[in-house]
Image 1 (cartoon, rainbow, N blue to C red):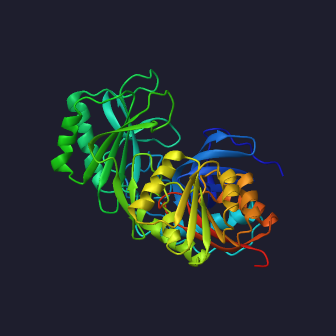
Image 2: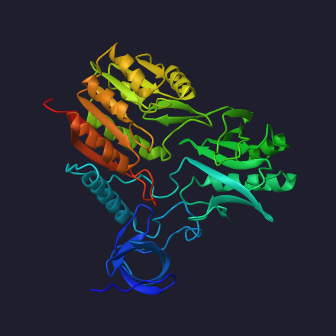
Length: 453
């Protein structure tokens, strides 16, 4: 059979079978795979070819001929242009089903793991769930504050984002007024000139907020006026700081933070414990579902007061400190010294002394800990790239009977689970948790048991 050659900009009909990791519909025409923006599984659409590679292509939906029963109208008016959310046009129940299937597929296809995957636990809130956002600023005749458009570096000006806390819209409006009124310069990526680069907003469950202005300089003009503009309009704003970043790159936060109003932190509560959160502190972006995630982890590990647990990639201790409430003693290991300092302060803030935080390379420091104590359980919460092979080997060498792995990337999770399997660990439970509604991202908690335990 001779397959028809497809040309760029050609219009064609296609049946959609799946969604890819970027939220595009996936279908085939004469055996040729297309990734079709705006299309959902079960739909027949008319699409136009945008880019053609040797074995696959990209296309845009022009007309939905047979709509999915799971299709809905996106509530965000910027959805078609913004590059943040990718699944607002899909019902939330179908989003959870897709995430469950995606984790199952990755574990099977990449890791050779056949363990059953529990259905994804929903976020407590489908919208208004994020506790952090970074808004780039730009100037195109008029000031722009918003997000980058999908698949581009074009800045989309917005006045609200439905997955952010509702007070963020008011904060951005006030910031926009201050910048325009005082003619504060905005950073230009091409020339490297201009002052304001990003506005990073953090919100605690209490409603308290922190604003960090990322600047190409040492200070901002009229910052007393900036503080005064928020004092009465948004009294929940407890902190304004400057993050100095003079590098000509796409990094958001600089290495130095300078507080110009209020406190140098806000306080977040996780499972009854207080955590001081600064501009550089890592915290899960869905505050409410963080507690769901950690409760799943602790239930899987079933820690006892007689046991020792080691938390690798511990950050500011957001998992370590709740975990040690269930165990006898905990070690937290993190390569970022500032995060370890935050963790120690958070332990002191909560009166917890049966914990030790250690700064340094995770694999090396775990080996040092093994000279002090044999851990009964290990917790892993690595970045998206997953766990280094040296760390996996060190975990196996520890003889820990149980490992709790928290992952934000099913692909690297599957890869790492395959390595753990070769070292004697079996997958006992897999529970996805939806921390990121309206996107294809999913958090997954896995329990690994040492064989014959």
